[in-house]
Image (cartoon, rainbow over all chains, first blue to last red; front, side, top):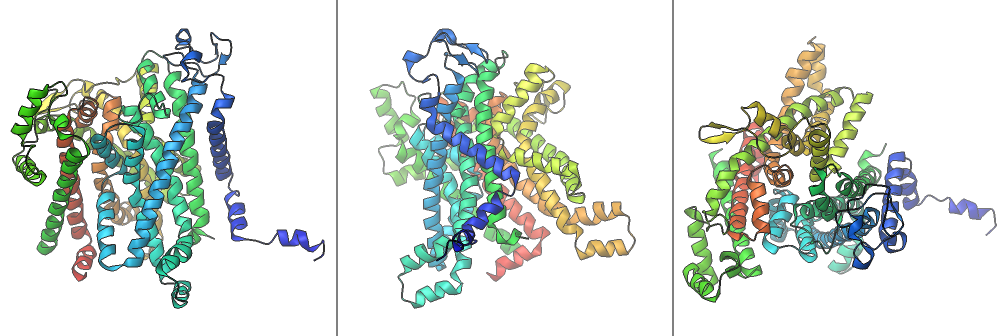
Length: 301
Length: 325
């Protein structure tokens, strides 16, 4: 191996590299991706980059309540985004809220993905009556909007973080199941699956090691879009007061808290958490949109 | 055709039965049913009396049977808060919700289809790209957030439109409606627009996709070759073919509008079923919750049934496919 061949071999086009370069061709996708990364980093680092832990009562002063953006807090630092009704610095509260919103969204997205994928694969590979029953249930559930299903479940289950995640998972698994089944049905007829079966590999191995990896592209797309909708759905339920409790203040809870002050012109208490939510949901959706364009071979030029 | 409808009716009734099982067992197995059926401040004797009266000491299947019998005669229990039959409460609040959802649907069609048509006919123009960008935003923005912004802009800052309640209503055929008074119309505009936003985006995308597909089809080329005016081709030939899927999908969305109205009604204090439901959940008024759930299930099943039948009339292939299965 000579030195000259090294840079050459580094340029070999792998599917992943092609995918990355196609994705970042669009400045919209790049912008959305960078925004999303910044949001995630801010949320993860929240305790170290905020002037105040908004849920440590020792650090919150009621005298700081309802200060407009840019005011000086009692304890010295500047509240660039103002403060809410009980004197929490909104910038700190938003970053802490982002942590909760993102974790609920991602947790429910991951569980729904796992459950939906396994059920979808079973439907595609088992076929016959099993497939019929599963797809009937999926169709039935998809005939109700996810928001309504989640709301119905919350009406039955009650509030709380576990119940919200459970409700979101139940409301969304069917989307994954439908996608995986549709893709797996196509993959199943391909020759590599036949070859794997001829080698005498077990059913489990064929399904999970051979078919599943080839279903990943649509799954990733559905996963991003559904995670965004889970975050937005959680915020909606929390805003309505039937989602997360005040002790788990996600962005939706913050917006709801600011709602009562809005009529008196104190817009910032609701608007800034809302903007954070908006930026998160829109950037995830845009990333998902471009992922679909890049990953879908039918749309390729 | 008759066979098709009968089959779909049977399927629909199976779904309703299934959902009644889920709702009933959901409420009775997950929570302690007695606290869902007796007001929270009842004492021990009250609870014991209620257990006997409601038959909660009987086997669960017998209870389910009683629940079904009650449901069939329209008796889903009394509201703890209002002391009225839960079903009657829901039905009293239904016209306001239907009015809101219907107005929103109308707005979505009236605003969405022309915009989609424009974007589909001239996909390269800057205005079209703007329309499409807005429709992506419409899909991503959480409804409640848009509602807040509408209130801040039009009610608080500009002071043009009211943000709460229904305003003056007029009674038509025994139902109150806001659509016939100026004050009522000014009250319904913001909530209806808020509710319609998602559907406007949907209508834009569906119409645009339909128009773009149709413009390349042979029948359009043929109509051009025949020398028909562009206006006639677009509004008679193309629109006729596009309207079927667009209108059916929009019709299907009517159900989701009613579901979503929960959010809009809460923000704009619109006195419909959705606001009633949120109040009932917060105040643990379980009979109202159960009644709402059952009504919504029935509603969706009926809508899906109607759309299926409509589809089979508009597109005979659906019916034939079903028979060959």
